[in-house]
Figure 1 (cartoon, rainbow, N blue to C red):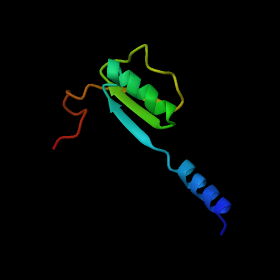
Figure 2 (tube, rainbow, N blue to C red):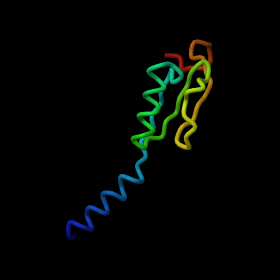
Figure 3 (cartoon, rainbow, N blue to C red):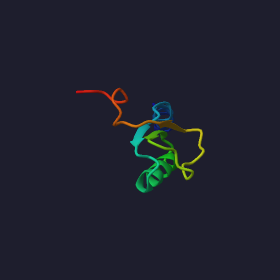
Figure 4 (cartoon, rainbow, N blue to C red):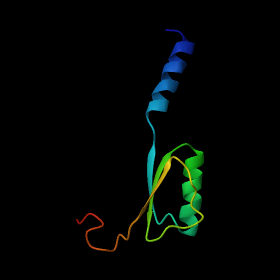
Length: 78
């Protein structure tokens, strides 16, 4: 197999493996910038916070869930 075919195969495999990121506190100052940076890199981003910020991007790869992790039942218990 020549190098050109191998490169195409590696590229195809990378496209099929989509990286998924979960960001808690995504409506905060740091969280908003982290969401935007991850979206720029092409990641699927899932964000949670106790309220939705108006500054969060409207992007097809971004999903937001309003969720308070301190409320019993909203998070996994050890």
